[in-house]
Image (cartoon, rainbow, N blue to C red; front, side, top):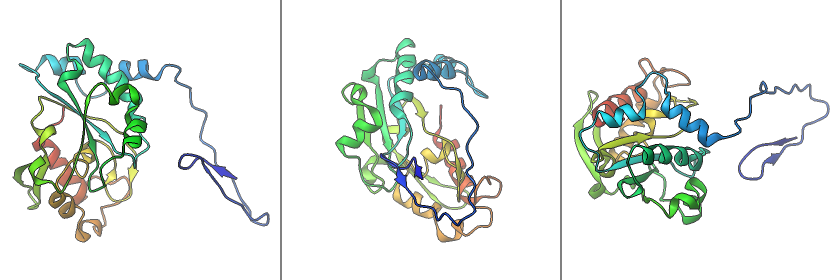
Length: 233
């Protein structure tokens, strides 16, 4: 049996004597034009003002920072960004104002081939790309401590931008409750001290640090507190 895994898949042999059942997902509609679908979603978001309204609410936008997942996450960032950049261009924000920040967390920086896979050649030659480096304090801004006394270090490129955009996917996470959103900030573009304090053994051992749980989940609550302080558009 072949599973979709990694770049080429993985084959697994099952013993014929096993009583096996195959669960298949329900049939999904195919999106014929994913870039246009992204643009429509940006124009008609759920539970938040549209990007156009957010941009109009700001006095002046000199810089835009878009956070994307690194190579360890299977996010189709090149598709998301094509649609997003077209929208930003339509609203008068051109590439020279836009910076893409790779949310590496405590991972290593991205290789050239990984950047091309994440962003596509279309984007690597058009916008400035920065890898987050969690242990480089010169690239971080310190914003005090959380309610639980976690030091807040966040990437300067993001914090100093006039328009702050997070991208990524949302799925159940085994100790954060769910991925996405505030997790793009912590651990994505946070300093090493912030990441290690939030990912402490004590926090991970909390009975509420598990799949699908936000309430009283110390890791989720800390990252949400930091996201509110740092700001997300």
